[in-house]
Length: 357
Picture 1 (tube, rainbow, N blue to C red):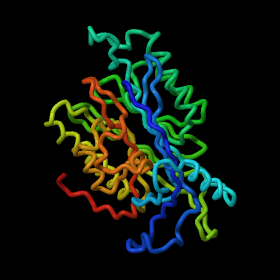
Picture 2 (picture 1 turned 90 degrees about the vertical axis):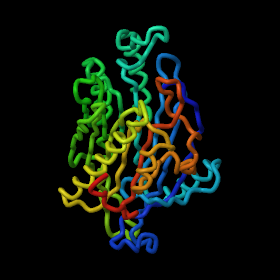
Picture 3 (picture 1 turned 180 degrees about the vertical axis):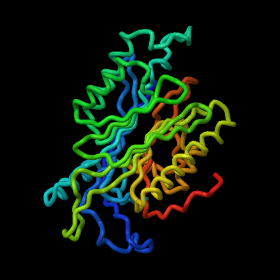
Picture 4 (picture 1 turned 135 degrees about the horizontal axis):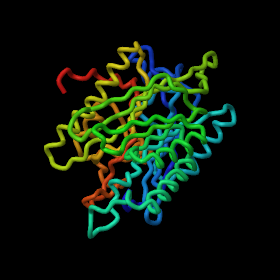
């Protein structure tokens, strides 16, 4: 979205442990390790010619296992060839599927300004602009063919655009879930899971009912392909919780509290859902446009809750690397990184949320 910079993508290979039976056995035993060699990657897509300019974060995520906060990536940032060699050597003995996730704010035509002199003129008034732009977005998504696609700012108020996404993604093997923002805002969320990778266990919708009419989708999914454990005696179909959301934009500093409350509601709902369904701890993926950078309170809060940013882990960036990558130029002309795919490994033994956020 906006004018984004192009960064080279890198691939790392690592192993993540499954949830241990005892908290103190997290890093002490390898008996429950999956044989899956993991590719964890994030990718910037170069700017397209006007009127399409986009950003996609793509992270291939090890869903049949529990995510670990610790990775063992190859040292340095220029070891793509080495990591590919390692991956191929592992593939000799076993077939190792990759699970990927894409998050993408596609900028609803009702918000896209097309005339700097007259901000009231929007792309939604010009079908020759918004229709081909969204066709190219779909071309990109179908080319990536991620296991999970999480979109924000989908123009749900336009039947033609909605049908376009449902028809093309549906024909490509995706099951689609759509949720409009409350109070008739005109845009919303769309999450698509590919039938070759996941089957749906449950779907829930979370309405924040606060300032900004924000919403979130929760998908409880199970992997289609069983994954073998190292002992060779057992195959598992891993269950995963996936959230797609779009947080409120911080128009002023007072809205930081509202944004934190929105994130708290998501984590609180996840906690309640797991308790309600008597679920054991499982991987959690939070996707979306968080409308805040690594300097913000939302980022710091999620890090404190055991979540890691896939793009930063893949590129060995630290929490202090706040301007190493850009995913968005906002309506004020500021460039920043606000689109994240967060991963949480339950073996990090995250503490229960406080009653009062």
